[in-house]
Image 1: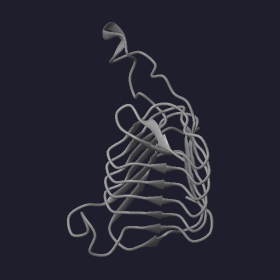
Image 2: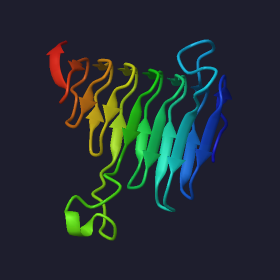
Image 3: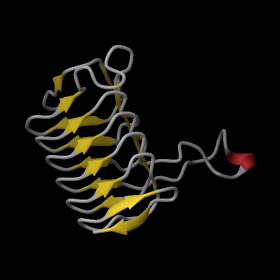
Image 4: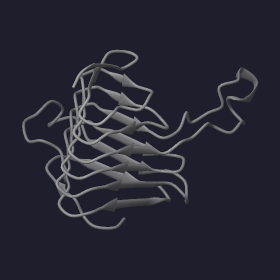
Length: 161
C-alpha cells in the first residue's frame, strides 16, 4: 500500500497487488448508510493488479473495489456513493466448462476526475468514465461514459449532459 487514506468507517485493504492513495482520500461517511455495520473493501488481488485513488476522492460506506486484472484508476475529487461496486475482471471464464479453471476476461477501469457515482451502481471491466460525469444510483455501467454525461439504468445509457 502506498499512501494512507483517512478512515471514517471500517475498511479492508488487501491483496498481493498495489493499492495507491494519492493525496487526501477518505473511506467512509459518518452516520451514512452502512456506517455501523458495513465496511469499504479494496483488493488488488494478483501481484500485477493495482487500485489507485486520486487526491480529494471520497468513498462512502460499503464500497467494493476489486482488481484482478490490469487495474482500476479513480481520479481526483471523485465521490463514490454507498454500496458501489467497481471491478476490472469477470473473475471467471464465461464458458460453463471453463468457469472453475479457465482464465477470466479482464480490462482496466479508468474513472476520470470529478466523477460522481451514485449508490449501488456497478462499474464493470474495461469501462472509462469521463471527467465530470454522473452515474445514477443503481446503474450498471458496461460501456464508456463520455465527459460530463449523466448515465442511468441497466445497462447504463446517457440521459443528458
